[in-house]
Image (cartoon, rainbow, N blue to C red; front, side, top):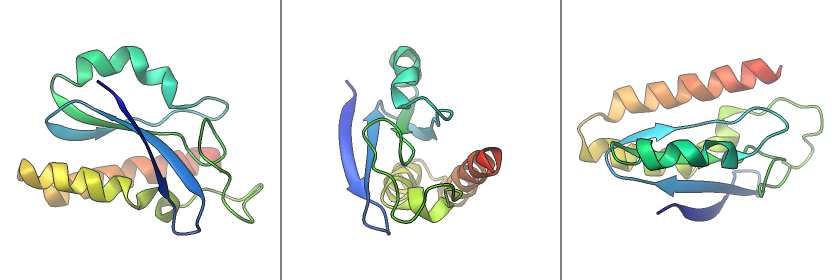
Length: 116
């Protein structure tokens, strides 16, 4: 079962994300002009092995634009809290805290660079 959640970014914007499954954390990011729902068909399979986190990046789906951000790149910090914190807790339960944090940061950095 996929849970729909909303949190606040450090800038105060609402960030929507979905969480599903059990196991090691896995974050799936969508492209621009899409939202996290593009991953729904994959979640059933992936959720058997992973705790899947699927954010709607700012300005997409149910997530709000970041303040003063039109045309500005999305920063890792904008997506980090609390999604990364929750993913980190899931990783700790599986003994993978540092590797997971570095992997999530690398994926987010690549997404930000691709937008650039």
